Amino acid sequence: MITQITETTADKIARQKRHLTPNYRQAPVIFTHGEGVWLVDRENKRYLDFVAGIAVNCLGHNHPTLSAAIADQARQILHVSNLYFTEPFLDLAEKLTDLSFADQVFFGNSGAEANEGAMKLARRYMRKVRKEDRFKFVCFRDSFHGRTYGAVSATGQPKYHDGFEPMLPGIVHVPYDDLDAVANAVDDQTCAILVEPIQGEGGVRVPSPGFLAGLRKIADEKGILLIFDEVQTGVGRTGKWWGHDHEGVTPDIMTLAKGLGGGIPIGAMLCTAEAGKGFEPGAHATTFGGNPFACRVGFTVMRIIEQEGLCGHAAAVGEYLLAGLQSLVGRYEGVTGARGRGLLAGLGVDPKVIDRNAVIARCRENGLLLSTAGEDAFRFTPPLIAGRSHVDDALERFERSLREVQESKKA
Ligand SMILES: Cc1ncc(COP(=O)(O)O)c(C=O)c1O
Image (cartoon, rainbow, N blue to C red; front, side, top):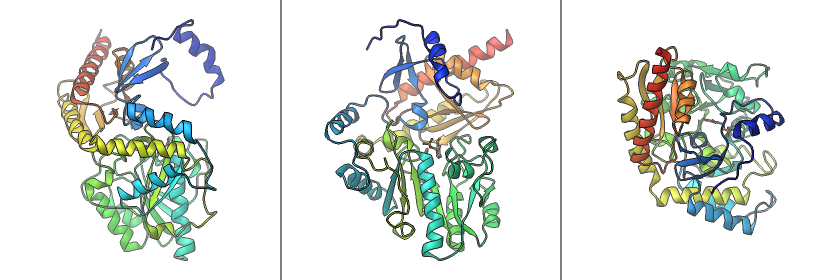
């Protein structure tokens, strides 16, 4: 596709940006289309996409089977409300429960909304089913759960609370990967522990083996619920369907979004039949949740991941990527080490030595899209369809960009 440009990208952004609320820091590029692991801007420059919409475009861009399903569904039915059933709605719920610990699903539209649903279900289960006045959540420092009031209150990063206080009451933040701190924080008003199996936004932090199992044990001993926020780690991203699959532990509630829609907004909260008793008709809802268009897309994404064996593929390519990133340690000043699992990979750096934003801008000039995570990491989240040759290409562009930024600093 060739775009006819009548105005430069810089001019178009400068002219139209004033119509947007100023809460995003966008790079000065306008994308028009994509193909596989590549994105293309309106000047027809190509970029290797190792952001994938922040771990969303798991099938890359313009996947032919997904695009065909989208077109087909658009010709059939887009929305009917939750007053009725549709086939995609039922099919995706069945697929998600077949492939997970869960018995039941509630659909929403985003990760934050899935977490709101999880938090509301946990409180309501305790009050209505167990008849206990438990409303507190044990959450983690450096966690990220989204920007709605419940989700952002659960998020353990004060910068996201700034100016929005008072936050939702009843949330206690403890250090990640610290089971003693969790055990001490649980009291007779706690309803649930809410945790990411790997902290994504917090810096691609993988907890010690046994951490999730330890949380399960505490939850069982104290009679509270365990919620895994798998919005970033779910749907094959870590090389298995769910991030918790690596630890052989299951939660009572799990939240999903991002990769589930492959680029179409959808969120889901999955739970056991026992936890699901906390809701009855009318207890919770959202107009667009379970919409047949989004569910057909989610169902198709899951089927393609299954058919193309993308979980195993992501595990193998992820290992290759992590090894490549680790090989940069010692070769570049300020690179501290690779971390992550599957295609959720981080490269830790010393931010006093490496200006991450400058490197990311240089990567963009060199045709590679990357993001940051936490205070000290670059984040690599390519589509699950990325192969070793894409990784080689990305690493070459990344190294070149790192070198150029370091050289320009010395000059
Ligand atoms: C672990 C986790 N939970 C929740 C969210 C929020 O999802 P959304 O932006 O779709 O509301 C994110 C987004 O980055 C996330 O990484």
